[in-house]
Each structure stands twice: as C-alpha cells, then as structure tokens.
Length: 263
Image (cartoon, rainbow, N blue to C red):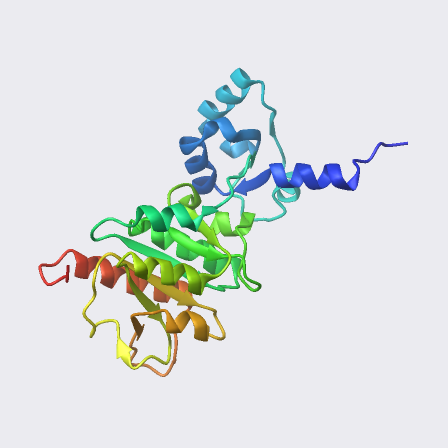
C-alpha cells in the first residue's frame, strides 16, 4: 500500500513550491535568487549549458535529473519548457502600501492591472514592464484577476524576477492613494476620447490597463486623471491588451526622455 500525502500536507507543499519552465525564465531566476532553487530537471540537449546550475545543485545537495521529453512535459505540466524545468520557492507579491508610501522616482512609471483575466497577457505585460524599466506592477485580489501562474512566468521570460509586483485588495483605493502622493494616473480605454499622443503627460505616473472584454471598471476609471486610447487606422478596432501596454509604455518613456516631458 502506497502512503499518500494528506490533503493539508499537499496544500502546504503546493504553497511552498512553484514550477518554472522555459530557458530565459529559469536562467533569470537562477541569476537572481539561486538560494530558492529546490529541484532541477532538464533535457539531454540542455545538459552541458546547465553545467553551472548542476554544480550548484551538487554543492547544495539539491536533486537534479536529466529527463526524456515526455517526462519533462509531465513535470512542467506544459510542452513549452525548452528543455529546462525548475521547482523553486515562490515569492509572494508584496503589499502595495509600502510602494505607495515610498513613491516613484521623479519621472518614474508604474503599471496597474484592472482584472486582466488571461495569464499569458499578464506575463506579456510583465515582460513589457521589465523592458521599459517600470518601477512596479500592481495587481488586485479581486475576482477575475489572473494569478501569477507558471504559464504567466513562462510568458514573462524572466521578468517576474525583475519587475517588483505588488498586490492590493481594492485597486480604486490604491489609485486614490497614489494620487494623494501627486502621482499622475492614466487609464487606457478603447472608448476614450483622447489619444495617448495628444495629452500632456506628467511624471511620476501610473498607467492602468483594463479587462480584456470589459475594459476599465467604473470605479477605477473615476480614479484616473486622464483616460486615453491607442489610435488605429485599420478595420480592427482594438489591440490585445499586452500589445497596447507596449505601445503606451513606449510613448511614456519617449515622452519622459524629451525636453517636452512635463515635470
């Protein structure tokens, strides 16, 4: 008879471990916090490239094993692992309150997500945040908000280890608190009258991206100093939210780096 872990024990194990997969995702993790590595699995093709990681595992007496493709798929619960899977200790998002209290840099940019429901969009936005040097990303505990899953981490390509992630219980309240610190809040909304290219942007600022189907919620929209859209010229009426995030953050960074950027 095989001893099965009790349900509570299984939940504790799940809460204390997180599966990462994908080359960039795993290597950025190892570069940033190697002490949180628990186990390593890899393909024969990746074995030599993972020499330094395997040496670390050997020195720390951590399990590491070469697996065939089918076994790697099973360990990752996915097929897009690129020959490497790491089981790690997760880092939970910090409370947004210290982030609000410390504020952003004088020309800093933050991002907030209003119930982004797709984990791939969450990961893609996080990757874009890291690319443009966003100082922090705020997500809420509200129903409908995608969680920081293994697939989100894979899509983020290592950005989960770069861009600080903060959580809040109510996004509208968090935005109100940002505004009390004289942080400009911009909402991205398909139906906005003004274009991101036509407004005067003030820094520091936080830009909010809304749900894929419903856009910004009414309470969040009320907390925005400006609500803007990305203008298009074709027959397609909207961009994927992660693409829109890239366009808007690029414009914010361009604006910040010109002499015309408002102080």
